[in-house]
Image 1 (cartoon, rainbow, N blue to C red):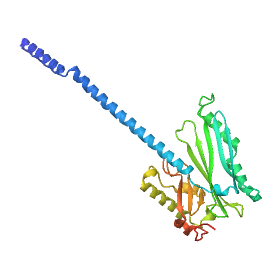
Image 2 (cartoon, helix red, strand yellow):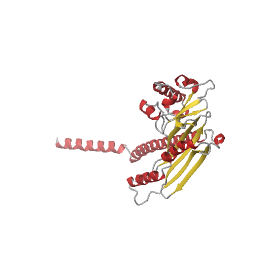
Image 3 (tube, rainbow, N blue to C red):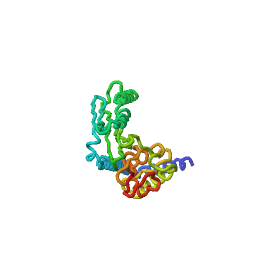
Image 4 (cartoon, helix red, strand yellow):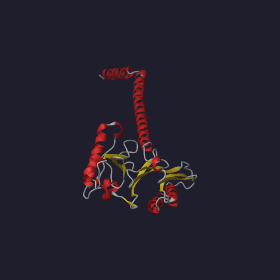
Length: 296
């Protein structure tokens, strides 16, 4: 009996050995290689997918920027009234490159009201330099090892719809160390050349029209999103952001343009910086309107 049991155990061991040896080492290697190839293929696909997305973002970012820079304005016909001034400073850690408008006080001494606001709000060089240096300290760059220069660039577009209203949009491009894209910030100034006063939303639009203008802006944004092209990943403006940016508009012929900083209605790599509203679409909420159609 013991002999029979021993034979049975031996036969079982032989069967197990044959079963184990039936899966050849080469087959195991093939399975491992196939699995490795699948993993590598997935990684490659993800890499190229990310590269394509990054390329698309660079492309749309460039288009968005060029549309801003190449937009036509009235600088050429306003050379007597508006003097274009510049300030440039280059240091190891930063570059300041400013271009800004300056009204000719020889024409009207009270244009100094406009020039003072430009000087106090945009040409405080010491304040800007201190902010940049403080940012470097917060990044623990005390040894100045990060040699990527920060850049602060200011430029502008100017519009003169009639002899009374001057509209200026100042756009500020900031390059921060370690960031992939530059960012744009906007300030709009509307100035009455006759009264020497600044014009704001409530001077321009009828009382209680904020909600109507807010709705029109979102309708235009939604139309842009639905049209596709450069508006992917954009979104409608929030009520809080509209209140913060409601004075950020300029008049340009028969349209009103509201400007928004990066990431208010679109990410930095796509969309637009402004929403253009035709006068015909908004004339019912304007305080002053004539048939030309221009503000009088």
